[in-house]
Length: 338
Image 1 (cartoon, rainbow, N blue to C red):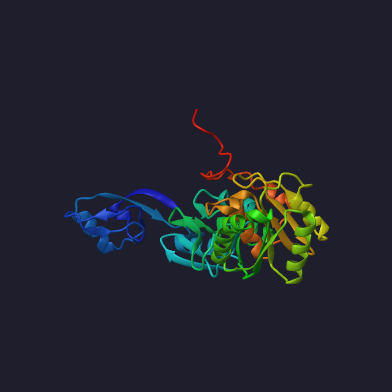
Image 2 (cartoon, rainbow, N blue to C red):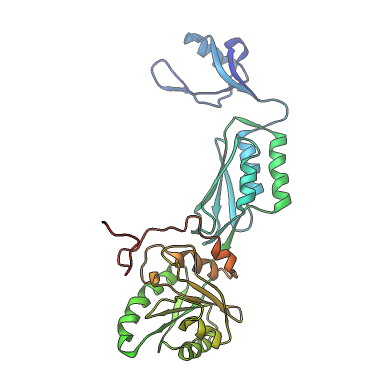
């Protein structure tokens, strides 16, 4: 594409680079308008002798077609592409789900040409149907065909960059452990926040069990909920888990399960345990689950509800951006005013 100022005698057929107002201030021509011979005479009558324009070359694609092609190349399952013009393509969610972004490939696409830009929501965001996930913007009025082919070749090599995994309605069980005299208090603290979170994600808290804070009691409760074919079991108790050998992890192991990972580079939520019993996820919740402020539960549970099998490595990769807003009523806030 050629870009620059040309005499009016050479402007017909070219694209205006900037808006041009009439002498009375009204909108006359908008940027990207293709000038006709009559338009040129109108500009000449206004006293202009030159104008800044863009001229497409033989191998150029228009900004709109370039944006559409990039959007189509990027979009995978669950993602809809609409190209409304002005060099843009909108990628939106077809259903409620968890957004998957191949971040390394996204970076490669954004480095093909400074005029090809793709902005997305953060990876693993929970999104609603019709929500905008990504925006492709072609900055110049045209893009060489070879640059579009370079983008498409990268994605053909790595696979679709932006996909959506639908959230599945699951039956959730909450197991709360503690002494008998704390039963009402602990159930009141944990039940409503857990129920609210699950319902927001399209699932239901269908079983609430209170047991003594002992491995054997927790193990028996886990086995009972596994037999009931729950999609997820959440363990909460009078004390947060502080070691793999603590009460809740031991209860999971006694039930026949295994601890996949303990601890997370996310705060609030560092004392999280993730385990599985014959493929069913069991989450040992940190105390921050009692708050509806965003914490690690909001990062972990949606992915588990899509059926994703999270590993310890998945959790250890959460440190970047893992410092979240503190919860005011934590027993040990991060810092106090001195």
